[in-house]
Length: 447
Image 1: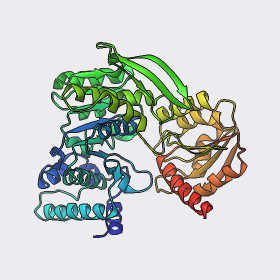
Image 2: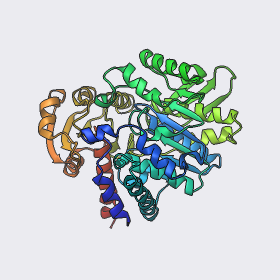
Image 3: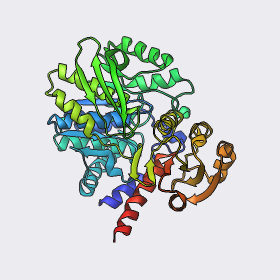
Image 4: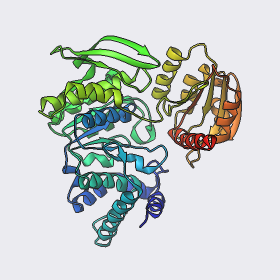
């Protein structure tokens, strides 16, 4: 099977959050991925790993930690989701995306085993899109002989396909409301799903949390005998400042006095918390005698890249791409706008998915924009501009509707002055689509 055929086959299995059916619901457990991993020889056990769950910040935390490990000289595997432009982004070795040929070869091998297991009656149903890609990540990292794997949970934690891992350390980033139809309608229920990644005796790094979420995580950790490393208790921020939209901080361990300067290149004050999650995990690994120097920690934080999250792709006017696909992420983005773009005219190109808290996100973001351009990301899950106008137009001071996302971006660019700022937000699907368009646009302009 070639690359295009492999991707088509995966897409035929449905996306991670496709509308649930009775058949899909029946498969929403760890049985398929466990059986497939066993048939592969448990590639997930071929290397030590870190497992990261949370509502917001888990991707950035994963990027920070992988960068630290790579800087320390480890051959790294990084597994994340969703992707922005191409599915290859989800599986990286030493920072490089899996190649098209390796992707096709790995999927072909996985699919042959799927068919074998189905024919033998060992699988009740074909593994899902996410289960297949997760198995591919496990297998590709094992064959690439990585020294360390960093895995981001796809959705929730307890029933996520990545949860067959037994990591060296787990991480739970900030827990907030998102995917309530899948994870529960209270913060305690959502936190319980995230805490589902905890394994007996495996320490867990826990970001600063709301009390009701923290209580659930602590209780689960006690049940399993997991040491809890709460970043708010482990570290104190001695000094914090901003440079060009990026947060800087000097932090120290409260108990030992060990300290480090953090200078992430990722914009936003919230990235200090995400970097602290990675630092706490790295410090634990140091104490377990993994060869990670203090310099590798600092440089790893400074060198980490995570596209599509407050990513500035142009100046004069400034153009930012940021998913901001749930209320918590929208609040972080709003704080960035207040801290760094106050007084400037902001144009907001906004599109969202039907299963998101659109009215709440709009209420947080739209008051910061001089004009909001409603559009639609290219996915069947997108909310239509007509529905968007019905739900959220009352939050916008000025509103324009341009259904085609690329045309919406061009509309805003044509009207924005050099001192203005243009923001694309509301959905990672929209960000990925327009990021791809932006790169091709720049290439065409350069000819």
